[in-house]
Length: 319
Image (cartoon, helix red, strand yellow):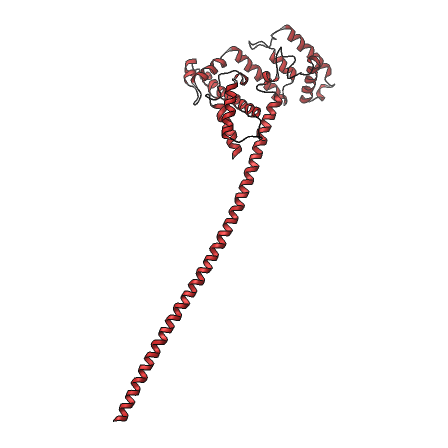
């Protein structure tokens, strides 16, 4: 129960614009004050000391916030666009609970050509990976990162295109013969290996090949991909621990309840036996008392009868 309350509470924070504003492009753009306030609210509600790192809490809220923004875009914005509503109508029909200014900011952002192009590129990448039953390789991520913002398949620079072409040639040369013997997962592994050969291993969190200053946190959101996985793992671990603790508490309560019920039953049986014994003793005493009274009455009548006979006998003698 505690774990489900925590998950629900973090989701509420992620959807509350006054706490976790939606009108920023990335989670990392939120101010330090906002992040500290989120942690303060969570720690006031739950005792997570030693159970979960603050970075894991923030990472999970950030993930829920992105999911909420995606839901708003899919279920509300895109549906209204498909219905042919004007931009003013979309502004006015913000979903319940979403601040007007934040909704307007989201609508403006989703409506830009750059956002549309990025959405198509991401969709293409996901579709391709899903069809092949695999995740995107680092080389594919490099390509989509360096495409023009107009939605075309053209690279943003000749240098990026040249590097990508050379890397693709290396991938082709590294493919097994026949090619049909390789799996999609094998292809991803080869592309990642070639990517590392071309750009070298990542250093100090820097993502080589993605431009100056690009890090995993900038490319993938708050924290690295590994950190995000660790965050989800930490949440799941905490939930499992809380569930186990909850089960243990229920078992303890049930055991204590069983002991209490047994004790109450034994006490009730003891009281019942005592009451029955007292009642029987009372009934016996009443019966004995009635018997004594009847005996006394019979004796008195018998004596009266003897006295009467004696008087009659004396009267006969005197005659």
